Structures are given as C-alpha cells and as structure tokens.
Image (tube, rainbow, N blue to C red):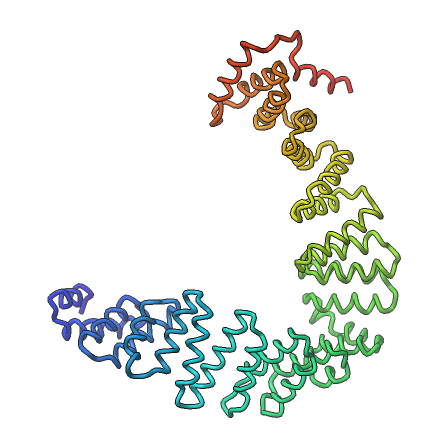
Length: 466
C-alpha cells in the first residue's frame, strides 16, 4: 500500500485498482485533502456519483473555501438534487464574495427544499447573507419565518434580538427573547441577553430577575439606585472578580453616583489596565470631569471616546472645544492637527502645527508638516525657514539638507542652494540621487556668486550665540 502504487494504477488507467489503493490510504489518513480529491475524481470516472459526493463533501468539512469541491458537487447534483445544487452554488458564490448571487441561490434552495429541516437551514443561511449585505429587515423576515417551525433553534432567537436592537426596536428584541424562553430555550445565553436588553430599555427590575451573572446583578442594583446593596456585593466579590474589567467599571459607577470622583477615576484607571484603550474608559472619565466642572478634560475625553468609536467629526469638535479651554497640551494638539488634516481641513491643521512648533521647537513632525505645506503653496522662503529648524535638530539628515537646497534653488538663491547641496554631498553618500546632486553642484558652481561665509556656517554661528 503506497501512494506511488495508487498513482501508477491511475496513470495506467486502472481506475478500479487505483480507487481501492487510494481508499486504503484514506483509511489511514482521512484528513489528507489530496487523497480525498483523487477519490472523488476516480469515483466520477467510475460513474459512482454518490461516493464522489461523499468525498467532495469530506473535503469541505476541512476546507470550506475549496472551490473545486463545490464545482464538482454542483455537477453531481445538477440533475439529481436541486436543493443541494443551489446550496453548493450559493456557498461557492459566498466563497467568491458574490453575495447577491449567493442570496439568489439560497432563495431557490428554499423553494427546492422538500422537508422542514432543509428549508430551515436554507432560510438561516439566507438570513445570514442578508445580514452580511446590511439588509437587516430582510434578515429579520427570514428568521421570523423559521420560528414558525418546530425545528427553530436558539441562535435564530439571538440573531433576531440583536437585529431588532440594531434597528432601534428594543421592545421587539425583548419580546423575541421572552418567546424563546416560552419555547423551551431557558439557557444562559438567552437569559443574559434578555437581561442586557431589559437594562438597555430601562427595566432594571426585570433584568435583575432574568440574570444569573453577579456583575450584571450589581449593574441592575446601581440602575435601581440601590447603591448600598450594590456596594456590599462588590466588596464581597472583590477577590473573585477584581481581575475583570467590568468589576472596576461598576466600582467607578458606584463612586460616581456617590460623588467620590477621585476614587471613581482610580477605578477607571484600574479598568483601563485590564481593557486598555476601551471607549468606555474615556466615556467614564468624561462624565466624571463634567461633574467636577473640568471642561477641558471633559471635552478631551469625549474627543477620545468618539475617536475610538469612529466618529471623527464629533471627535474634532470636542478637541476644538478642549483647545479653546487650554491651548498648550501638545499631545492633544497633535491629535487634533492630524484629524483636521485627515478631514481635509489643511489650513486649520497648519495653524495647530504652528502652535505646536511654538510650544516645542524640537517637534520635528510639526516642522515637517509646516515645511511640506509651505512647499505645496509655493512659499519656498518660509519652507526654508522650517527646514533650517529641522536641520538644527539633526545636522546629519541628508533628506532635510537636500530639501533645503531645493527650496533655495526654487527661491532663486543659488549661493545658498549650492552650500546645501555641497553639504548633502558630504553626508549623503550612497543615496540614489547622489549623482543628480553632484550635477546640480557643478551647474550651480559655474553660475552662483561665491560668498565669504557659507550659509549653513552662518546659521550654526547664530544658534551657538543663543
């Protein structure tokens, strides 16, 4: 028994012997996709489509993206089982990211289904495809149709509840989960999701009845303004739950409700250690600073919160409000400038970068941005001013020296450009454009007026006197 023997039989067109040899190899290694593929192919050659379907289906159990297996199964089922044919074609289109085609295939699979079980499976996949294409209402319709059958399963109720919540129909989300309980799905997943839905709809009492999760119980007690009872539970569960971020967020909420804002901030920091950079961190901080009438930090944290949630326009507005309260926080200013630039407001961004460069003369990013901007609008003398500051920070930066030379050349200051290019030749050996700069030096040397003291030496002298 060997692979070589099986391949030799196949090459000699001894397909029955090759099939038996591959089958023995399959029994030893049932996960080998190449063997499964040969068995499927030989089954077709031997006109045994049922076995071929078995082997190609086995391939898909290990590799759901195997297009060859789908194509072969479609050929097998085309004349014998239209339901399976449409399912395979729908799955192939999904793998190929042709979701609209996959939706049409599964609609046909629903029609072709001959029993409730197949129909439910097809509708569930169809609902999933609608979700993937953001057709939430159509997805809801498919899932609701499944609930009319005895074969409905727990995930259908969960999908429906989440979709209703997305569509702003909290009441419908609660109703479908309550229906799940009545249908016998009294599971932890259903109860906890229902509890969460009750909380979101403002019904903490019902949420408390539904949940078995201790942290959710505390959350319900706090929402019911039973602070003392909630705090007692939090104290009792500290050793068991203090490694969980939600525990510290609830502690922060308790201290916030009791007006102990310093302690609340301490708990927020503990939460952030466990769930770093969560939007909730900045939301909690913003609320605390609002209560403390600290407008700057409130706006700053609302900005960070909205930035993490992808709400860039709102974030920019919050950072601008923070800037009006306090204009010397370089980290915030840098974030604001980047956001403004990304948002297409380049002029406003440059105002912020200019502010940064005045606060910190060594901020190379701000200087680079300002130099590039001045170049883009053709203000080469001012570009040179910023590049000189960059040169002071790093006198071995050949890129800065070259750009400085180009800025002076565009400003028709040939002697200054020549000095920069000569400096570049000293420090830029090995760079791709070294030869090009050599040519510039030769050209400028023949036309520029020699100065008694090189420009860069002058600048260095000025800086050393300060």
